[in-house]
Image 1 (cartoon, each protein chain N blue to C red):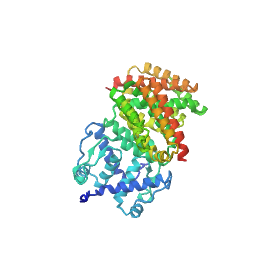
Image 2 (image 1 turned 135 degrees about the vertical axis):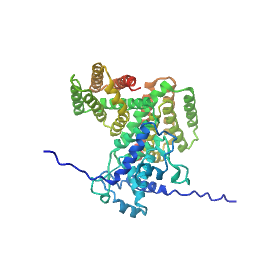
Image 3 (image 1 turned 90 degrees about the vertical axis):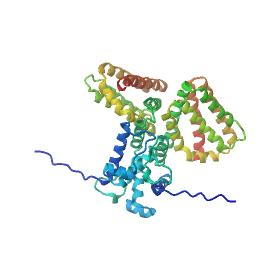
Image 4 (image 1 turned 45 degrees about the vertical axis):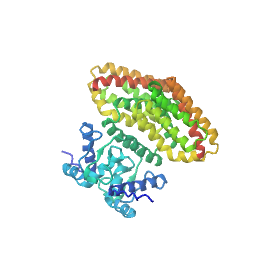
Length: 244
Length: 244
């Protein structure tokens, strides 16, 4: 006896996934790379034998992932989307929504950020070029200005961590670190604005950053990792009192 | 003299982004959480005063991010999508396509994976429960069977790393580690199948995993991190000869 055929109704909504699969296959095979232009929507729909709506749905997913960017405003859908390499945009978006959904508690995001920053610091200690060190140094000098408004201080602080990640020579680690930082950004900035003992905090932050920088200059990866970890951990401990 | 008004044509394609923003705002505000059902497409379109197509495009993006799952096949678009928490699905997809686009060289993905696994190992050494240790131990025992086919060996190997990440007690680190591993998966498995000195490799892998496990049991985070790093680095060095 043969088993009865087990048919499942096909959902029409799956069409866009087939479009997505085809575009991803072209990318996997190296036939589509950054800077290439996709055929215009109408043409792509005809080539694949699907509706324009299904094509558009697939393109939206790729756009949100930072894999596509739209041509200039006003050129219309006929000019074709351009393959882009903006993974950090997509990562930030993805992490932010899942953090909001409490799929990841705040402490886990902090711990993941510490993990990535430890990696950046270790790699930066091994690979930083004189140019990277000069940029980090310059940021520290600017942060040392006691009259700096705290928002500008915060921007320079962010940039210091980004340059350190870049000095690590690894785009993926840089992007993941940035995305994790951004996922924490909103609440953090609000708490940052509420700190009443700003001068004390700023002094601690300056000292912490100088200490990380010195360890990177010395090429001492373990020390740089330990120092960046302490810095981030102390900072969030202080902030979490304010974030409530 | 006032400056001339600088009007930009609005692109109709931006409507889906407005839908996305509204859904994300509801999530940020905690009015939509995992398990909740969105209104059916038609109703959502009416509530927001936009086309069903725009709603559907926004839903596709959320689906690809692992934020929505469709109701059972056959129930149709009228039953409403369910808010889900499947970040690793979304992360894997995102990283895989950007790795394929060479936005991230393979070495960077390996280095990022090492960074995450070092973090897992350190945290696991501090937080692993007896249950986690028992599961890790059991996987090692099964991997010790010399008659095990290499595909099954590989599955158990993967599971060992997942359990260690879980023992770290951090879902985000677990998901990121899994996504990074998956982004490397395809090429790796092919190379794995081509290894001609399998018995030697298996012996090395068994030794490595036991060494990581012992350090976790001893609660020695630094040693566990160093051992998992050496293990992964050696393994990819061997594999990259085969992947060429």
